[in-house]
Length: 242
Ligand SMILES: [Zn+2]
Image (cartoon, rainbow, N blue to C red; front, side):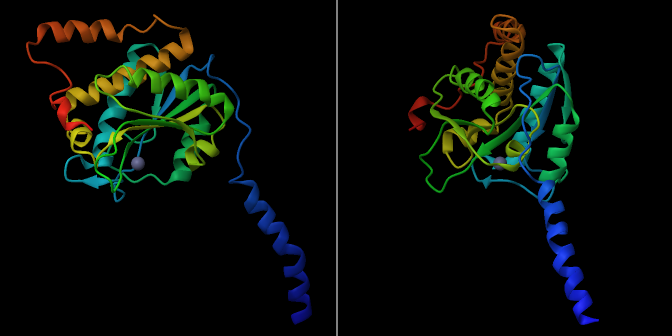
């Protein structure tokens, strides 16, 4: 009897392990960066998962959701279909995010995060991707973020993050500044600054799909700034940024 069990395990176990290994394997990414009609907008963290939590910037999950919602709206105004992985303060496991991401055919995936470091002086934007077909989108988003006054460029990098590695379509993850940095943490709490972040990311996405000059959100933004005597983003003096 023991022998039989051993024999069964001997043959069955590798088969089982093999089956498990198939599911999380990196997918062959289809490059839809010039054809996509849907954007999956992913607000990092949520629910029991705060993400980073810092005195200046508060909980990462709050800032990511707000930027993601603003981005979602801007993309819909630009005639793109959108799907959000979460639209409230709920915990969504990474594999569920991947499932939502890959269920949308002819799509791209954009994940919104804020950064954290033990060194409070570190600040700036970073954009991550995994598949070669995602690089163009990543660079475009990063360069649009660099048009924000006093922004610091920490570069575009490849990473093995689960939502990027397992993506069936182009996928990027944007780190919208460091909550651990006094200036950027303060900005992350500012709704006008979040609006600006969403604006730049939306502009990059629309340009990636339709080419430069097509995005009209900037004109609306300029109009609202004209009406308001208060300066938009950038309430934090430049001297605080190092
Ligand atoms: Zn995060």
